[in-house]
Amino acid sequence: MHSFTKAVALSLALLGMISLPGCHARTGDTAAASLQSELPLSEAGLTQVPLSIRTANATHAFIVEVAKTGAEQAQGLMFRTRMAPDKGMIFPFPEDRVASFWMKNTVIPLDIIFIRRDGTIESIAANTIPYSLAPVRSNEPVATVLEIAAGRAKELGIEPGDRVTWQ
Image (tube, rainbow, N blue to C red; front, side, top):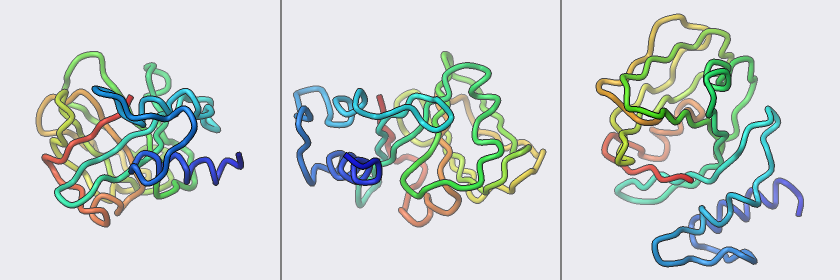
């Protein structure tokens, strides 16, 4: 399947609009979890996983790269020149902490979403400034940080308290 077609099909499957072979909803599981094994590594060689954000009005599907290691997290999205609207990068932490990010060597503006261990959004730093050395911090300890294209959180109505799920 062509990669663009596959990405669209995966997004639609996440939203429950179509069914893909081998992607069946199960009790206590999601279509997103069963799609994980079908996603190729990103151009940067990182694992990609489906992620959804449930707002008051809708559920929004993304495919995100997982920055697991310290080196991957330090690199983040530096030097990238574009970000598709349905893509992102997630930074899971082994223990909750006040997260602090900066935009050094980050060419594109981002929305940085801070996520609690229970999956709820703690806060959003919208439209961060490329190349800025100013710290962008969560207000409390968080388990995960999600970076998406700048302006997408506002465009999709994503707010603190909304729920993020990913595998």
